[in-house]
Length: 632
Image 1 (tube, one colour):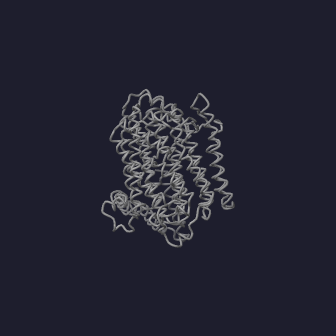
Image 2: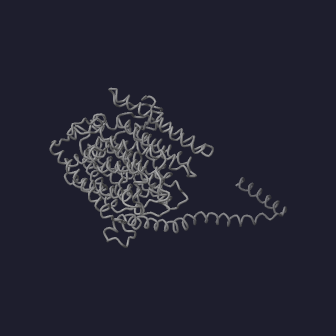
Image 3: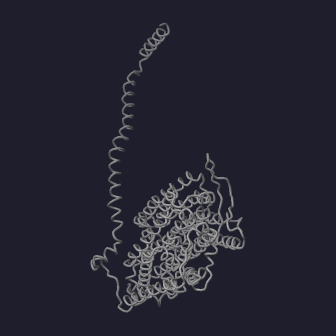
């Protein structure tokens, strides 16, 4: 099956081409089947690759496809790398992607752009697969840019709405900022190592001393790329605005694919970061600050998708915290569990919005449990998983990150546990306001409340099962388990693992788990007391909020700050350059050339009198002058 790896990205690409070229001639049902089948077929091949790789001794196989770029010292083959890390991401991308495709067949059924939507989804999956399969940084960069393009198309899918177009442009532009750092990092890698192939770069890097400045520079430049793609401070503001796209897009971008690209890139480049303690510290600090900052904003949001969006930013911060303290397996583990429960939560939110006839404000919901029981139960499972409830998938991955953070730096652990408490509170706030109490919407909305069709509920049930049981592949030794994922990923991180030795006593781990569970239980109790017992409903108007609450509700006015200190000055400079440089200098030179030509031609054309005698006279004079010059 490994030799068939080329089929994994090829199948979604073929799906994109078929739907893209013939979408108008295909029925909606057929377009949905083609798009979903292409991703499912890719998933089937990925499953075969995973089991074949797991059963053989060599856990790293490079599959060459063709010679791509040869220029001077630069030689870049188009080849795929199959190892535990890439094979795991293949399963996540194609598996979750397939469920989102199936869900979309019902969610987008009445949309006039149905075929176009599935074409974009297939193209998105293709580029994401290219990103994780490439055996060198250039192929990764092609996939990286591709998912950026597709995110622009999907976020602005409803392009007739100007606000949605602006959100798409914002995502595209902010990602370009990060992408510049990533590109400079790739250039510096080539200048330093003479190659951009993972195998050659990492083998040479191992001979460098820890803390070598050039390695730190490379690691930081790559991290700038990760900050943009994975929405870390200060390049995070595009992600909440990406909620402008259809809900399945939110699930695809925020759960299993685009936003985890930065995590994958750093995990893939782990040896470069292990040899750069300063860069790792930056990653950890940015990650934990992002986690806390986004969690505080999530506490005050009332749009069901915005709460989940800031939750995603916060969870990504957790993953970068893990990478920054050397818990590479923990970061990848959380990527996997997060893909399960966050896809579940977004698709669950889509089911709620579907039942509410497009309403997204949780203040206008309430009491939905009896109307949409399947959605309610699966959403509760996702909420428990992201909160780290014992036994659920999020418990194991979050506990692993917090344990490593505690060992590395107690302050990082404290901020992490504080963020975990906030996460639990705002997620149960969301759950209680949506499903508990009495209905607060209009009579018309209540009349149309209904459970979603099976094409939407079956993916929810599958994701709920994964959210419940997915953490079992990473049960820690302290709980008597065997961390299968750690063993599976060991070949990828072995060069870093012997440099980063982790050991906490079992008693310490038990205490840390107990503290995490206590914080979670306290947050659930407080959310229940506030929104169920006391029946508190968020204020309808900003004027009713106290100053601090208003500041958090307005997301600390970061967008307004960026508008004032970046956008407006750049627009002012641009307008000035347009008026002076473009209109006066450039246009002046161009128009001046026209004036000169017109003026000269106006003089010369006077010589064209139309009188034959004059022409004969001029010809004779010319002949005389020619003879004169020849003689003398």
